[in-house]
Image (cartoon, rainbow, N blue to C red):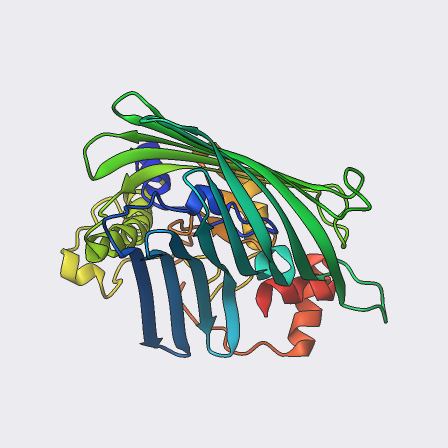
Length: 400
């Protein structure tokens, strides 16, 4: 039962990836020439007044505007921003815009502009703009293949993971680079679809020694016209990152896909359902612990409305929430229970992906109560870091 519930959390929650390479070919939609405007915009704004104000802003957009049948404006956006009081909990996303000129049936040019930021990886800001050309190598009822060649300007700002005393906190880079990629979209029978891209980016004077390589694979299985299974794989390998971080960045994602192309409300509700199921599963697991695993309340029985008041003995503070804000505790839990075995992985700041995942601690003591830590002072952080045996600058990344 427990493994099944955890598995459902993973399946129902989409993974968001932030890295220094955006696989726009995998994200660009197939264009319907009969429609001037197509795509989706899914904004979510949530504000709650608790002991501190809680603000969550999310948006996913993928829009095509067809102009004169030979011009296409494409916009791709992913944003996630969350605050608790004055503290930023999550900040990351990307914006990609391109204007495609279809010169003939198989060849097109497009200028583009792109921006990314990912605090969880230490990427303060990345900006790029350039001109690319794309040639269609294969065009059949079941298969499309493109080759892309381009030149672009790139500016990067990265935070040093462990800066030396009195050293600069950020490293910067701005270069002219080339872009070479191959992309494929292939329908495998009635239900399967494969999308794949391989990318090479480098400055002209360091084509191999300081190159960046990327690969992306999306595999979908359509169960019904609106529901299917999906799996995605992303690999980025930077041979010479400007700060000392891992050269490779990999994500693997599997889940249920809800393809409500003409119903944005249902798309949004499917994502909200995943988050609610994760919270409900955590609550049910706490009940199982109280009644059976630890067995200190075997006769407990509450109606659903009563459970909202949390009248039971014990608490389950979730990591990253007001009473347990230090997300580095997730790394300790990962060593104990191996989150990867159920498809959950951690970002460098201890955030869990998929986002509709819950972790925490359980306490059975009769006097255990929830509480809000409030604002943490510099002296408290220093004392906490000393007791944890962790450098102060590292603790600040997880707590502040």
